Amino acid sequence: MAGEQRDLTLRFLAEPADVNFGGKVHGGAVMKWIDLAAYACAAGWSGKYCITAYAGGIRFVRPILVGNLVEVRARVIYTGRTSMHLALDVMAGDPKLSERHLTTHCIVIMVAVDEEGKPSAVPEWIPQTDEDKYLRESALKLVQMREKIGDEMAAHIKHLGL
Image (cartoon, rainbow, N blue to C red; front, top):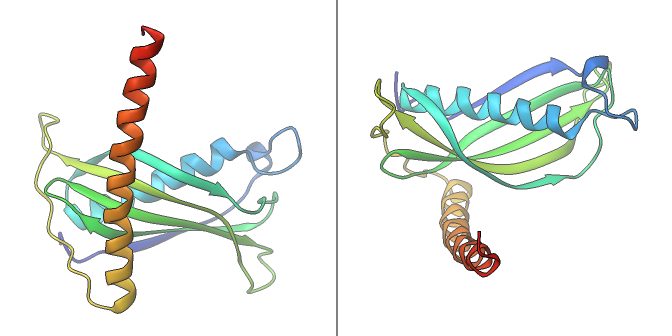
């Protein structure tokens, strides 16, 4: 039911097909996993099909090794009228051990859409805990920062004559 599933975790093993030339899991594979978890979380919250509108602030903190158990946690940290801001953390470690390390973190914005592909309203997420309130405020600050970056990018493109 919409508005009830705020977070989820996808778990799987990193496979040899995910490796880059350096022998570690390819960043593109990690980004795909992030997008999958963001979609599943946003669809669960909204009860609707969702599209990725933004992925940013991706920090690759630590490499993932082939054979690692990978956990991709997505959680809603802010909702707009049709959008959901999600914090995503990727954790990984030896599946024989209980310890997992943060490998990647980012923010993804998903937009719910109707059958015609038009933005569609989502249930409001209301923070309950102090941590939730902090995450919501952080998401709002990031909105302001993205607006400034967007203005700078537009000026840059205009300057280049593109």
